[in-house]
Length: 290
Image 1: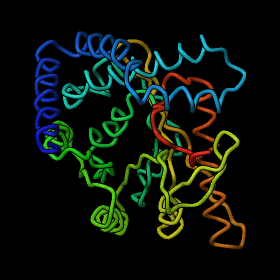
Image 2: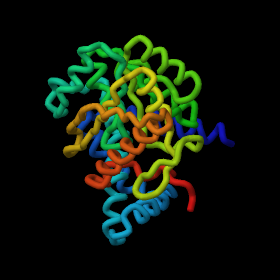
Image 3: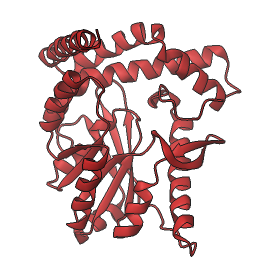
Image 4: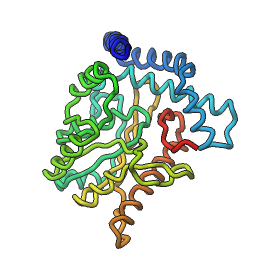
C-alpha cells in the first residue's frame, strides 16, 4: 500500500513539474501559488502551522493568522512552480534577482578560506545557492531527503541541473561537508529545522532542539558563518541579502561558544520571520509538543 501511494505521489509530482516547466516561470509561479492557496488550508499540516503561529504570535487575531498561513501556502506553491526553472535563472544578469552583498563576504570568498553559508526555509530558499554556483564557487549543498524515493529522484533531477554537490543529511552528508571544508570549499546549510538530538536553544521564547553541527564546524575549520536571506518581491522576482559573517564568540568554553552561535542564528531567523511571517515554512514541528 505504501509503495502504491509513493508511486502515485511521484507520478503526480512528475506531471506537475512537467507542466510547470512547459508554461514558463511566471505562469508556473502564479499557478503554483493559486494551487497552494486553494489546497494548503485543507491539509492537516495547516493545523500545525496555525498552532505554531498562535504560540509565536499570541497577539494576532484569527484573521491575521489565516492571512499568514495563506501567504505561506502561496509561497510554498510558488516554490514548487519555480523549481524546474531555477537552473535557467540568471541571478547576476537576468533582472529577476536583486542582490545585496556585504563586502565582508566578497573578502572571505576572495581569501579562499572555507566558508559556511546558511539560511532558513524562507522565501524561495533554493535561489540562494545560485549566487555561489553561478560564481564558480565549489559548493556542497546539504538537504533533507524526501521520504518518497521516487519523488526524491525527481527533485534531485532538477537540483543537479543547478550545479554544486548536493548531499543528504546524515553520515554520508557529514563526511562530504568535512571533506569540502578541509579543502577550503563552501558549504550551504538550511539551519532552521528540528534536530531531536540537538541542543535546546531559545526560538520565539521557547526552547527548540537545534543541530549543533553548523557551530561546531565553523569553530573547527575557522569558517565564516554567512547568513543568506531570500525575499520574494512579487511573483518570480527575488531579493537575496547576503549578510556579514556572524561574529565568532570567545566565551572560553567550546560548549559555550557553540551555544552562543546557535542562539545568534535562532535570534536572526526569528527577526526575519517576525518581519515577514508569510515567508517562512510554519509546517515544521519545530518545538517539542507541549
